Length: 404
Image (cartoon, rainbow, N blue to C red; front, top):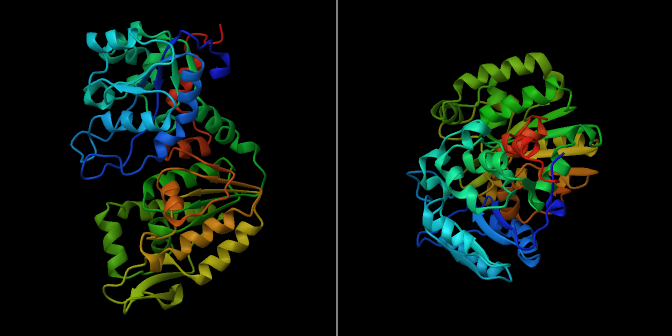
């Protein structure tokens, strides 16, 4: 059993809080979107209001990427979102970092530097090895407890996620607690259970489909987006050169064989598109599968009306719908229909779960709401929705007894 903030005597306690505030960065270095920071406000505000001394740990971007930067803009934004001032220090586990953390007073908060500025944090270790990294070994002596609120990163086994709860009493923050409460009991959600797998992350989606179908978690799997295009080709449909070339260029050609094997094994529970939408003369134009291949230069960019009618019927009979990935290129107005209508239909069922990541971004873009739960994590949500363990959660379960 994982301890939560309800089990933590916060006042006067110095707490390291791992959050996931990895955000889009504007050209001027400011935050382009603060949705992930807002998600953690409840946890941070509660700890500060209860007299905690809070040191925030987080990553931003990947080495070499345009969004790989300091956490100073994140600290500035948290100062605006919280009723407490938030400081920033450009180190993470050095002597200067420890002095800063040890100098915190009750209700003080400091954001430490991007954990990925240090090579160890971009590697994955088992918990015992992670506890011996410079990051954990250097900072842990300044902390009394560790709170993990970074559900979106919980599928990774990096030092800041699995090392600290190996040597410190560990607790789930409010975001982590909510995610585990909903996603950790997927087998108990109302049936029939329908998964909608869209977007462009084809290997991940096929992995998920295999797992949920083999485990009996899904009554139906509806495919869309690039995932749907791969299944169409696997079913013997010629989409035309543009869509096929895109799949090949993404390195997904071998996934067609995997999709074909999946159709052979569980085809009766897998729904594939019946028509696709393309741009023709600047307008949306829908083409039935029987009328394929597409003309030269045309690519399948969304599902069409026939597919949406078919999918809505399957969704109408569902007790639980799990959405992961958009149905098409929703960023373009003429191709937002598939994603919008599928998501709208999903809100009518008893339990509707959005798998985070790109799916949550699509929701915000389209202004669609009304779901039972919108996850903060993409990869982590997928693992939980297939009843797979998460390293960071396992580390909290197996660490020092926080409740004592």
